[in-house]
Each structure stands twice: as C-alpha cells, then as structure tokens.
Image 1 (cartoon, rainbow, N blue to C red):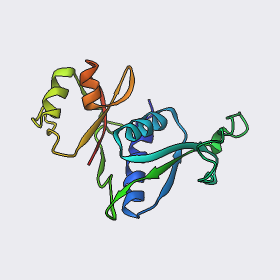
Image 2: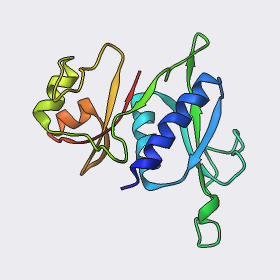
Image 3: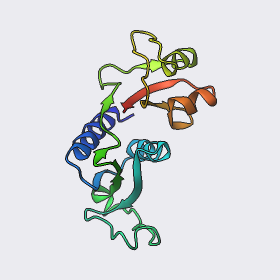
Image 4: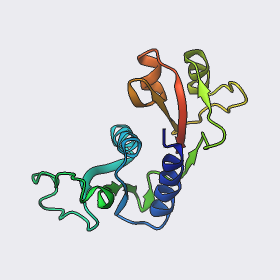
Length: 161
C-alpha cells in the first residue's frame, strides 16, 4: 500500500485549502482516488475529476469522458479536486495523517466505536464535533461511521476537521 502517497495528499490538500485554491490536483493513484471519493461523499470537497496535467474545463468537466489511461500517458494523469469554502473559510481546515510510513495505525470495530463517540482508544484521542476519520478497509476507504455501520475495522488514514 502506498501510505506515503496518502501522507503527501493530506499535507497537499491542507496547504491548498489554506491558500484558498478553488481547484487543485494530486497524482492519480488508487489510494488517492479512494480517499478523494470518500472526502467527496463526506462533503469535504465539491468535485473529483480525472484528467491530465492541465485543469479540466469547468463547463465540460461533467459531460466529457476523461482521456483514457495508456502506457504512454500514465505518469501525467492527475486527479483534479474542487475544494469547498463556507463564509470564506475552508471546509477542510485541518487534515492530519494518522498512519505514517513507519507507523501504521490499525483499529478494530470496538476501538472505532469508542473513537467515534469521542472516547480515547489505544492511545488514540476520540473525535470532536465536526471531525471525521477515514479508514482503509477491505471494502475501500470509508469514513469511520460508515465503517462501523458495515462492521469493519482497518487502517486509520487521516483525520479531517
């Protein structure tokens, strides 16, 4: 698993939201796509679009199919993410990666239930109001509450508030 790409993505998204960018790009990898779609489902980002090195045209981004990935262009593929703002403040004000390349943090279902209720578990502090925790499970990347509904534990990726 490319946990280092998730760590880089979290810091990139935090920097982009603090710089008040409307659109930013990250490398098109499997885990970046899964995390981006989970952030989109949770309402932290407005859009996820596959594209090339230049940003997609906003008018045709929804209707136009993305350029197919081939061996010749695989290195230039990017995911273009639309960032959200509310009253001039970023919706994603703080992104912190939980697992690091040398320290992977996993949690079972019972531990996730405690953390979501705001209680500490395994030296991991509980979530506060407005915070989300994203977990890599065998069903993909899910928000912690979704993982609990589906009775899954997994690798803790990042914490968003």
